[in-house]
Amino acid sequence: MKQSEFLIVVMPFKDKLYRMAKRLLVSTEEAEDATQEILLKLWSKKQIMGTYNNVEAFAMTMTKNFCLDRLKSRQASNLKLVHSNYGDNNTSLQKEVEAKDSVDWVEKIMEELPEQQKMVLQLRDVEQYEYEEIEALLDMKPTAIRVALSRARKTVREKLMQKHNYGIA
Image (cartoon, rainbow, N blue to C red; front, side, top):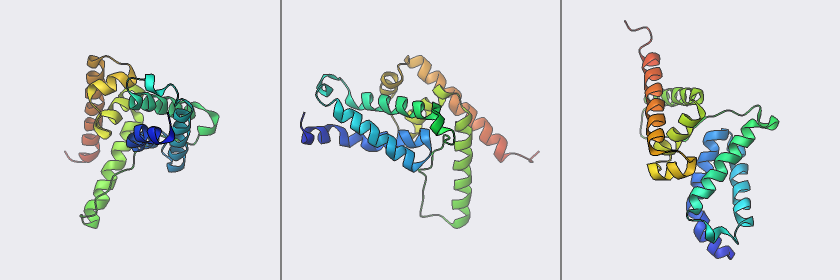
């Protein structure tokens, strides 16, 4: 595989790799490093890349595993899970502050979810992957994906309700 072919195959999902890394590693720099590392690994596998049914799924799995390894490493003791790609320029300052606060709460709640629920919620609701793609990426059965997603959403919803209804009786 030549460089031009590699770019045609890999570049369309490069941003998804970055977002997955950012979700898991928090730090923009760490996510950029992880994305670059995955792209280098993909480049080193360019000769056998044509044998993969779904290069994007393979790359996302590599990204997930790389980031989880980084989180487990000693170097990553200061990393945490956060998601911060929210923005809306057409709102008042008060609404913007409230929206940011809600996003921060959702991020904190997502940090507390079990790893599997966190990954399914990220892939389905943030990255908007189809169930079949999530099934391939996480090697889970469709029923397990739906159950994990339902539980994750329910937990997020309940904890947000507790936060917003605090003090109201």
